[in-house]
Image (cartoon, rainbow, N blue to C red; front, side):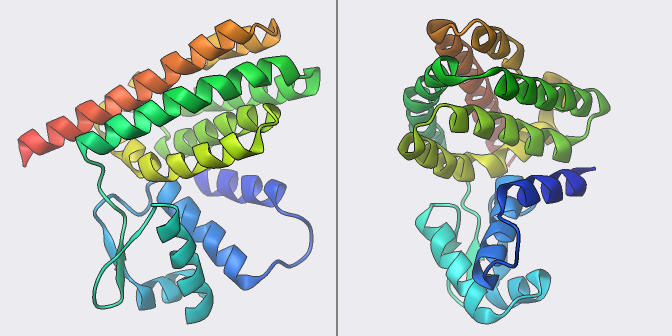
Length: 232
């Protein structure tokens, strides 16, 4: 199910026709990081990525360069890269940035949303609720990201949305750690409140709903990291 969701979301986001190899490699590697298939602290070789992605060395190096610039990968010696592990200070910074930007985007979405957008968001949220009930972590991560990304697209604030997308690359891998610790039934889902606010075009309520969603999600990441530190 997860792979089908990823393939369909990628296909919907890309124009028809063949795209450059480096872009395909970048998107595939980005998805692996964003949805936690490459775990925080996991080091991989560049040669290993070329085999896994069935790509040439040049597009893989270009993808790594872009993802390193986004803060999603760190270069190591011996031609290896690693998904950085979040520190508590990193969580604090990311939470501050998310709380500064994402409620603003939600408020703008409340001003711009139309009936088609709203129905699409409700359909995504229905699928997300199904993934939560089934305990499908991969589907939850994919659908949760797609829901947020659609809200931010509706906001029509591309600079803020692009910044937030880079932030997601830095905390996204840790969400899978949270899923493994808490299970899907205890994962953050303030989407019902947000959908109500968007339906009513209520800017303040949309901002507050998003603020609550961000706070809950980042707090669970913080607690999961603290628990892991205590165990180690």
